[in-house]
Amino acid sequence: MSGEDAGPAGWPVRVRVPVEPVEAAVEADAVDAAVRHCSLAVRGPLFGVAAQSGDDGPRWRVVVEVTHGCPQQARDGLNSLLWFRAKDDAKSVEERRALLAAVARLETEYVDELSVLGTRYRVVRAEEYAAVDAFGDIETPRPTDPEPPTCDWSPGAGAGSPGVDEGLVLDPDAPLSPLQAAERLSLRSLAYSGTRFPAAVLRDSARAVETHPDVMLMPAAFLIVERAGTEPWSPGSGLQPTAHDARRALDFALTWLEPRQRGLIPFDADRDVDAHTVVAQNTSPAGGELAVLAEAAGRLRAGRLDQVEVHDTVYRIARIRRLLRWGPDGPEGPRPSDVNTHGPEVLHLRLDEHGTVHFEESAEENADC
Image 1 (cartoon, rainbow, N blue to C red):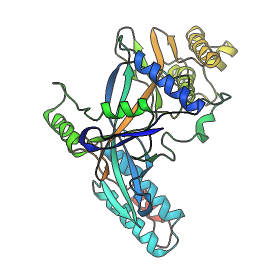
Image 2: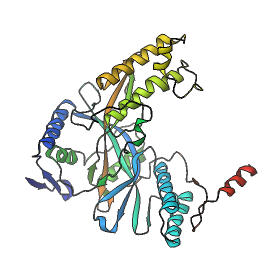
Image 3: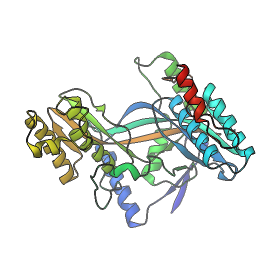
Image 4: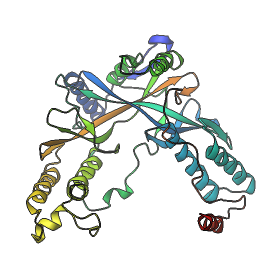
């Protein structure tokens, strides 16, 4: 079954009622979550890069994941993408020249869009938000969110995991479930408000609703949030593709990173030393504090928990959502009021049009310094 709702500004939304059992379960799960978590907490913008080729139609493909904190970080990601494509994939001198010309621009200019070899690349801006309940608690993973059949907690297990947006295609015409359509329509008017935002930020946000009247909902991602006492929740990790990836990051933080930050394990200790190994050896005067951390990590592993408390700090796996504003020419790019933490710069060794990497030039520059 399908239908269309033109919605505000005449942008159509295709709605398809789920009929397959798995789809129906996901939709029912989403309805339950919407009842429990009826408000949104908006964190701020994230940036990445999307690409569109001639045969993509209105679709764009994410090529630099939309997880970066400022536009320049996304530009740097595009710089690296094109440099390695020139080094490894170019099939002719002409192709390599075109790719290296784009890299040269990205090394010196604040470029938000460029075309290379028939493909448009655009730095895109997403809004990061989470659903919260009446008590201000952030939504945790849903029962129907993807989970691995067997949880691998071994060191480095996440190295081969797909990225947050790996293979993601942004298709404004893709059919949505009824609840997805309702969320998309309700968020079209989302804009910043309140005195804590500078006037330029408020102005750009209101303008974006007019220039990019539709929104594209991205797949859920997950991160660690933490809260000490009555403090507000604060992020404790970057975005992860699955809840298990976020739990594994929390396990690492509890057993490896926090002991080093608290001085319980020396920073120069062997890579394999963590709270578990030190407690098992029973040789450290900090054994009691490390045992608390190891025990919390053990509970996290055994129960696939989404929340643990250690030393009066609550750690939670939060379900995070992102939306891209969408206009007649596709996804929104950076706004004038968005802040860059650094400027364009040379990121890689010089690569010539024949595919040769010039290592000796870097060595000479270091000698001059």
